[in-house]
Length: 132
Image 1 (cartoon, rainbow, N blue to C red):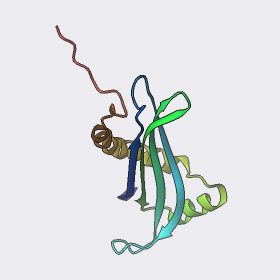
Image 2: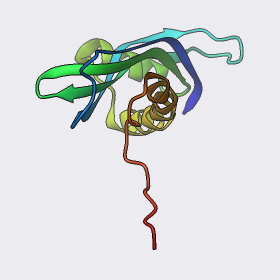
Image 3: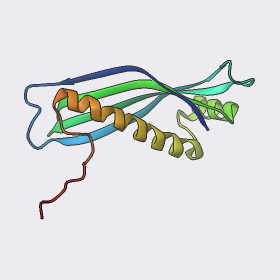
Image 4: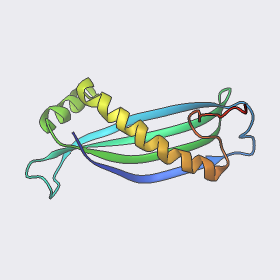
């Protein structure tokens, strides 16, 4: 289970052509997994490092991007998680699915504010109210 969620860096930029019909792509990536000691727990936990990107694309060109790097602390099955990563560079699906869902939830909400600061549309569709 997730016991910590940490953002280490946020980078965002847009070019002067960041307008019009842009496609938004998400680029989540697990970059490293290792065992870590945390004072709140007697046993080691898994430190799962991530990179999360939101790219605003026009064709093949990135017109704006938001990149967030950080780590998630996972308590449970640390030895198995770390050894699977070292052997296959992937997480077991039982861990990957809840981890990615939490990353999307937390990081997309963070990206909304960053997109607003850049003057970009939110990175996911927002509800629209019709006039009646």
